[in-house]
Length: 105
Image (cartoon, rainbow, N blue to C red; front, side, top):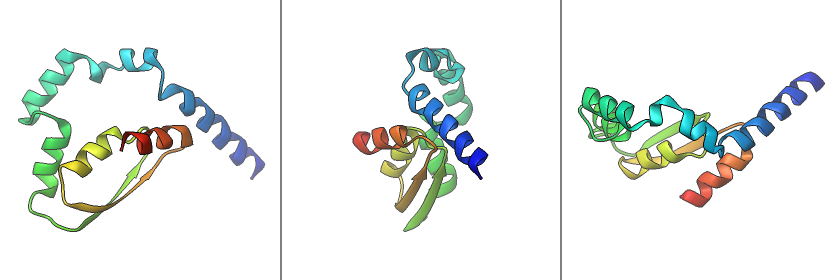
């Protein structure tokens, strides 16, 4: 049990910092403008969130959702703003990232 708590703490501390790292954000391939433009062309939607909502949530009402490993909750909050989700539980190992999501909301 003690080892599990230690592993969780180490993981949590890592992500507390990494979610806000400029190096990580610049290095993530999916954030590159060319990669994003290609993805949007392939999806046929201006954003991933628009594609997801039109493909899976269109016409559905009063939905509940669960997000695991949500980080700063940016994607989840955009989906929430574009859909009929009435309850969205967001989880992440980093309490610092979740707090940033609350502030972003």
